[in-house]
Length: 399
Image (cartoon, rainbow, N blue to C red):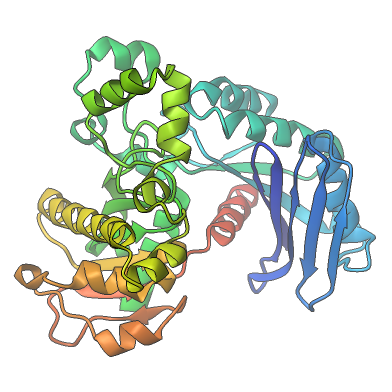
């Protein structure tokens, strides 16, 4: 059975074609610069590629090119879209409307679009892509949507509510939603399997660290708290995002700069974080390199990230009344030994001990980093959101 997994952005359309018989990736690619000029980068599993500029006025043209790349190009991997059993879509914001993956209907697409105010960069683009996919993919091919926020719908009210008047929650749905849920769900289950235990029996702190980062408390396989909040701006310091900031500091800075609310939002989302503090850039690799060369601001932002992750681990251990394992995933979590070592250093109270030599030698590979005498296990667990979307899609269409 072959499933197409789609991750649509406002101007991009990333995809993977997965053979679910052995969960192998047949092809993957990205149609980007939609609405600007257009470009496709496509690669088959055997190394054949398609890389060319295109005309993508809308997501529909991008889907048409995607189909062409898969079925007719020099890097094609199937003869017809009839060979595809289903399409699975990643959706960023499902709010408290969607607590699980669902089959796509016109009503579901409308509801996703209605939630665009809660994720203005993503949800409208998702709706456009879903409509475009319906117009291009054969009508008999079922489609499924998998929500980043759904995993966090198990958080109790004491964790997701803010201290604003209750009417703001009732009327405007202002609450913590959390993100990266697809990744946290995948890696927590993968960790349990690697440990030889049931996820229902474990208390895990999952650290998804990348250009955007979130820390999640997973108790018995369920999210009970997470660092990102109403939007992906909350939590630890990130590539260009502030992370958690005193709201009064926000209004103070906005007043000093004369910013409108939208300008302040852009300032906090796109000009802050690693970029704003270090002055070096938004990529952790560049920041870490500069820190190693003695750049004090770069070192500062690295110290901030490590310190904030430590605080979340401590608070989530308290919230769950225990901790069995910590996992690192995402671009930084899987590849930055400096961040992993920094987080796990001076955690003697928890009995956390890692093999520093091993930690420094491993990148992007499922690995147990903790020593045999460590009270809490520490792991690198590579994430695979596309595979989880494909698995959800297969499960739903099988039913």
